[in-house]
Image (cartoon, rainbow over the protein chains, first blue to last red):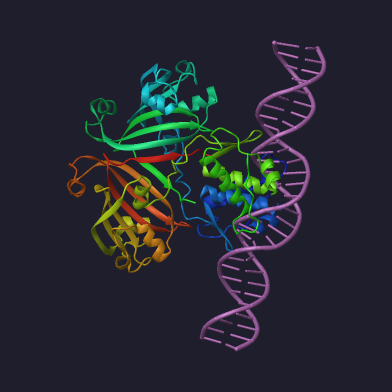
Length: 247
Length: 247
DNA sequence: GGGCCCCAGTTGTCTAGACAACTGGGGTGA
DNA sequence: TCACCCCAGTTGTCTAGACAACTGGGGCCC
């Protein structure tokens, strides 16, 4: 076991430096699944940090899912692979890039309209309040993958349609221009069949299997900022979930 | 703000007593979404615990997703509802009971067979090793919802077929009889169409939209113990996901 | 009014230690 | 041989403090 020297004058917390080093050792296979990580006491003594700091590094690895602790025994590297991330809030752009594809989007329509009952309820607006509605075909590696309709309250991001290039990532624009950081989302998925218009936009036969997504996205603190309905091809798109345990 | 008296002689950790009390206050609406929780210093002073213990209670609420902290400001109750749980490993039985339905199952077949390439790879077995394969129709409130095929290594749960009533919960039997506690699973979902046999078992027209699930389940430490392929009706079944943020 | 500084309150990180609870192995005694 | 005890190693919980970093508001000065 080799442990790194810590940079004690860095702005990076000590526990985080330790966590990153252990994570790196796991990634490159220096620490193998099922094998114990250095104990709190060993880290504490070798790196001259308090046991609580060593402990914080190990616990952060546990909450990442790459390790698990057993009282009286130690902390061990888990078997599960690092590549399979816990399902996270990602824009289509981020998701496709993570899968190694080149994403882009084609604008179908963008307009400012009253929210209506369904969208209003999801975003906690009255049905009369105005929302920005953007409809796009999502494309990965030149293959149309799905059709996505996004609604955002106009009050939250005025002039979005002037400032946003619909071919790029909406989430990045929200963060960079408006400081809106989406951290959580609730999503409902149904299975259905493509209707005539969807089939035309996606270039697939009518009646092909599709996913129907309905997603509400939240900023920290739980305020709803986005309501999305989308349709994705069943033949080219898969959902990958990591399910965790109940405490 | 009223804080409870702590039982200092209890085996229940102090931070957990505090966490449970705050959780109760949130549940009954005494602490409302968006409002601050008592600060670390207040908890520490009122309950005569160290600040680290108060902090542990608040951080555990954050990791449950019911609160969030902001440096320099405080820890606040999140808006999201408690009823909508983070997606968790659940047996069909648990899932349906949580949705308020009465689940049961009808056995299609159960047998001991060689794993084969696909199942063997998923469970880290050779293709020749024997697995127990159970095929069941899953029913909720007398409506057939899906067809599920579960494979488990025979070495892990010998005599399972004698000890397990296929109409009940497999996960409960694994836990109670073999001490196997499934804590994590990877799941891939695809959209497809029902073939003739599936349509017959589910009582739906051939070609109706269905979900195709492929799930590998793990015990603590990451050992794979179960490989499941299942088909669920698209018209009666929805997937609900809570997506979290990346750290 | 506007800009600036300072201060109280809050969370983030860290220390040095303590005892409890549990695991696994070795040794001892019946 | 077997049961039991004890011990070293490990994680879980807890204490009492320290300083850093950030927020928001009040007050001061220009």
